[in-house]
Every structure is written in structure tokens, then in C-alpha cells.
Image (tube, rainbow, N blue to C red; front, side):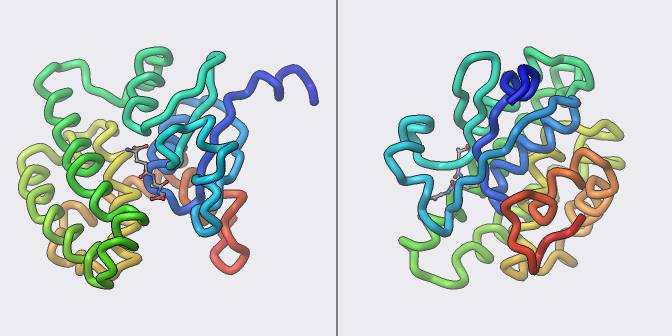
Length: 215
Ligand SMILES: N[C@@H](CCC(=O)N[C@@H](CS)C(=O)NCC(=O)O)C(=O)O
């Protein structure tokens, strides 16, 4: 292995994980090259002792960068923003930053955790993720009606978009009726025109099954 390859950040992820997608988009947006190590959630590889050593929460993603292991996708996003401020994903204005973080929390704290694999399995109800995504999207749509233009926060791409896109992908998978959320859906389509989001799409990842794979 050549020296450059050895120094690349290592990203432990699963192609369909929305939390992994957030980090992939940010790495791509900021032009940070990295190597992916797939962790299959279907095979429960996140629960093996080898992986738990890297990530005590036994979830993806984990990013090894700058000689350290980072867990929790939002902490990783913030770290990348602080250490690689070029192509920022947080606005300069403190009010706009707070609004972006509010949208991030609405997705990363209020929506994704209650629709995560382990929660769905425990709830044992087929309608569970669809119900909670629909429920939370109604409030996100209201908030976006006052902040969004082309993207979630005016015309700037921010962490709000980075978090929204994978959540919408998940919502579409469980057949949430997106006609109820025209702003969210419009932003999803718009973001997927951008290279950083496109390249981070689950169907373009090395662990994506061949029947879903896109190039
Ligand atoms: N708060 C964590 C959540 C991570 C998380 O829930 N990851 C999901 C995939 S998006 C996972 O690994 N689920 C496996 C499981 O529930 O066992 C983060 O943002 O990194």
C-alpha cells in the first residue's frame, strides 16, 4: 500500500445508513478523500467485538481521521467543519447557524433515532417508521417554509440539507406520502443534482448490492 493510501481517513459505514450518508456527503463536499470499510447492518457486523472496539455505540458510522477515531455522525460533521473550514456547511450568521442546527436536530435527534433499525425491530410494528417520519416531517415542513429557498437555509447548502436528504430517502423507502411535504421533497431533488450528494448516494457505494447499484 502506498503512503498516501495509508494516510487516507478510514470510514466505517453501511451503504443504506442515513447517518453514514451524512458523513459521506460532508467528506465529498469538502473534497476529503477516504477509504470505505463496509459494516453490514444486515449481518449485525456493528455488534461484533472488533467493531465495538472502534465504536462503543455499536452503530455506523465511525471515521478514523487525524490519528483518532470519531463516532456520532453530527460530532463528525462538526469536527470536519472546524478542521476543514473550506466550503463551509454552517452559515456565518449565528442566527442562521442556530436555525440550521435546529433542523439538524429535528432530523438527527427527533426523527432518525426513533426510526432506527434496532428500534423498529423492538417496536415490531410495520407502520412504525412511516408514522414517525410523517409525524416529524410535518413540523420540519413548517420550519422550512420560513427558512428555505433553494435549499433548507436560503440558497446555501448546509448541514440541514446534508441531514435531510438521507432521511427523505428512508421516508421514500417506507412509502411516506411526500406530496404532503412539497418543500422537503423539492430540496431533496435539488440536492441530488449536486455531485457531493450524488456520489454519497447509497446506490453508489461499494457495499450496495448489484441489483440496486448505480454508477
Ligand atoms: N447517533 C448516531 C446514530 C447512529 C445510528 O443509529 N446508526 C444506524 C444506521 S443509520 C445503525 O448503525 N443502526 C444499527 C442498529 O440499530 O443496530 C449517529 O448519528 O452516528
